[in-house]
Image (cartoon, rainbow, N blue to C red; front, top):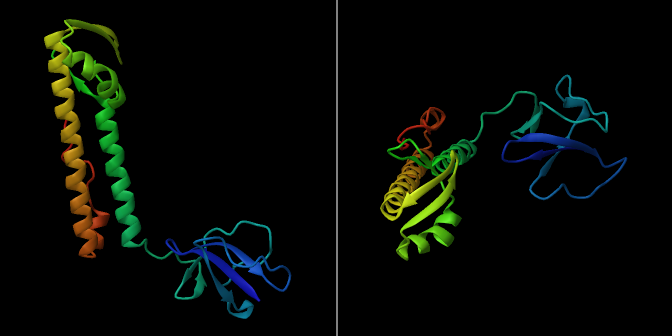
Length: 189
């Protein structure tokens, strides 16, 4: 028997099997297989073993070289990944202080090292920032952390707004809304 092995989320054929020659058993976890009728395959589908299979899909149990539309779930998943990447980039970019210094410190630095020092009433601190070293007074340090925390929360809040909107479009099965969704909207400067 001849089979096409495919990945269900994308329906893309990943390999073909000829169990008369070699039977590897079941496909890899998460993949499925469909029996092939060698006499009913589309022109151009090559059953030569060993080569990669590119440009073939299993749609309604048949092999085709016409790519099916992406599922709404995959579109939503890609949108969510793009939103999360924008949030992470926004948080990592930090904030620009009044003197044009970019104040960007990692959350690990903020929670593990700098916040306890700031709360302890240290009168000054030198920090290494993206543009070099800067000396902060206690008031400047607290102001900078306040701006950074506000920026961070705005980024996370906007990520939540996007996730809710994407989930609503997915629940409504709104393909056009998902395909046209703007992940760039609403981010803080």
